[in-house]
Length: 249
Ligand code: IPE
Ligand code: IPE
Ligand code: MG
View 1 (spheres, rainbow, N blue to C red):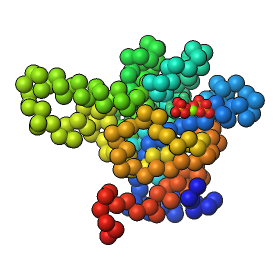
View 2: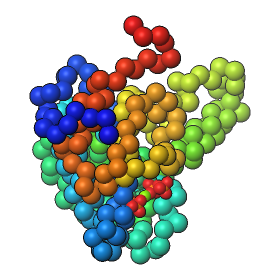
View 3: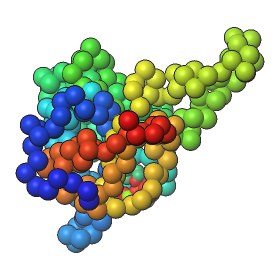
View 4: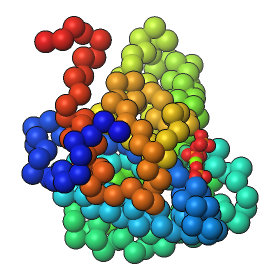
C-alpha cells in the first residue's frame, strides 16, 4: 500500500484537506475466519468491532460523512444461516452503539432497500435513525441491502414518472436532478473509497457517486483493519493530486 509507514497520527493530517465523505467496502470477514479455522460468523463478529473503531476514529478526525457497505443486494444469495447471523449482528450493533452515537453527536442513516430487511431490524433502524436525526457531528451511513444499479434504476423510474406526469420535459433533466433522487440526496460525493482484503472491484457500490473518488485497496482483511492503517490511508489520500480531468495547477 502507498502509505506513510506506521506511527501516523491524527496530528499528521492536514485539517484543511480532509475528505468530506469516506466510503468503505468492508470485505474479508469470511477469509479472516477461515484463516483462524473459525466459522464465517465469527469473522463478521470481529468485523463489527472494526466498524466501531473506524466510526470512532472518523468522528475524532472530523469526517462529515462515513458510508459503510454492510450488506449488498447480492449478499441475499448467501446461505440463510449467514444472512440471519448478519441481521442479528446488525441489530445488536445498533442497540449497542446508540448511546455512543448520541453522546458523540453522530447521526445514523441507512441506504438501500429497507423493506427487504427483517421487520425487527427495520424497527431498530427506524428507531436509531429517529433518535439520532438531529445530530450534526458526523453522519454514519450504513448501506444495507444496497445495490447501486437498483438505486440508479429507482432514480430513472422516478424521473420518468415525473416526465410522464408533465412536471418537466425529459430534455430538462440534469445530473443534479438525478443525484437528488438517489439515497445520497444532499450529501457530498465520496472523496475517498477504501476496500479491504485486496479485491480490485466495486461490487455494485455507489456507482454514480464515486465518479471522482480516490480509490485505495488494502490487502488487510476487514477484521484486522484498524486506526493506524486508516490514518495512513488518509495521509496518503492527502498526497494525491486530484485533477478532475484538468491539467496540473
Ligand atoms: C464482508 O466480508 C462482509 C459482507 C459482505 C457482509 P465477506 O463475508 O465478504 O468476507 P470474504 O470476502 O468471504 O472474505
Ligand atoms: C461487497 O463484498 C459487499 C460488502 C462489503 C457488503 P462482497 O464480498 O459481497 O463482494 P464480492 O462478492 O467479492 O464482489
Ligand atoms: Mg467478500
